Image (cartoon, rainbow, N blue to C red; front, side):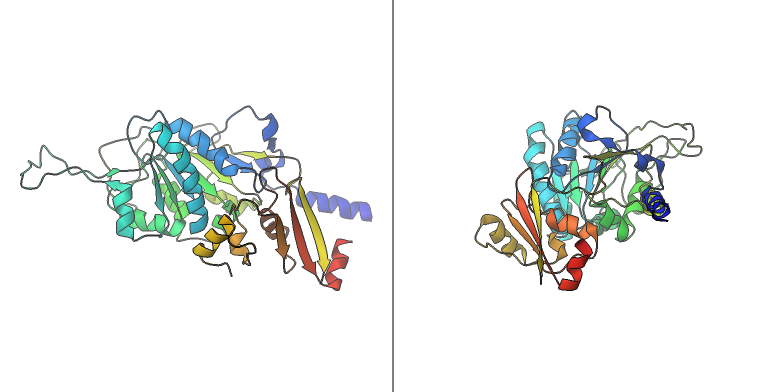
Length: 356
């Protein structure tokens, strides 16, 4: 009877999607796939893991246009990732933009879109002079809501030349619709079988410039009616969902799942967890916590995803997390980048028995 229960449990844990059943350990990885899904431990440097390759690949680009888009669920995470790109990109002549609603949309437009130089007082022949708007950035870090604002309303904002799409904290972005940003982005970057891009009139109002990105197009075996891949997608999460219906939203092409080990969820090796019986502050307070002016920070789970604060030695769970995913993200704020740390969980007596 017990053996049957174990077999049923093992069968239930087997992912429904074939490509998730045999993940590739990145320590032995020596290939590259079109759509990558790194299953990375918290605090292991996943931002650099995709920022460095993107910057390197775009360093040889000849024309400035929006080639890489990084989407994150919160403003604080986007600011953190933008700082990483800003430390790398200028060295190879790349510029990085931010669209998170931190400033007015008009200020963001002035930073993201470059207008042609026009001298006042001079009449231009409309047949010889074309007033074309161009991207002022090569890499854009954005939150879904503000990204949709620019897609819908910003003249000259186009994803036509996009080569890389990074979806960070994927499980959260797939769980919430965020104005249907994902199907919109995929549709705007998808070339049809005959190589044509969706018309702006058929989709959303924005202006295509004279620059055209030629993408490899053709029907591949087993993908009848679908064009050859348009852009490379990188999907990152420490607690990636195995729900096929949610993953189908990403429209992945020959996906390759990368992990850092055999276990589905991994905690840092230097993390010590303790069980003890028994609102995130404003950005100014978070800055004080990072600088050491504040030694203790009380926050909600909004702080748990991806936020990197150097020197955090202890994490205390005031309440026992209802899901292992929540515990992974909370504990992941310490013991980062190979350092040691402790995670304490306050529990009632009737909760302690669950861990015996």
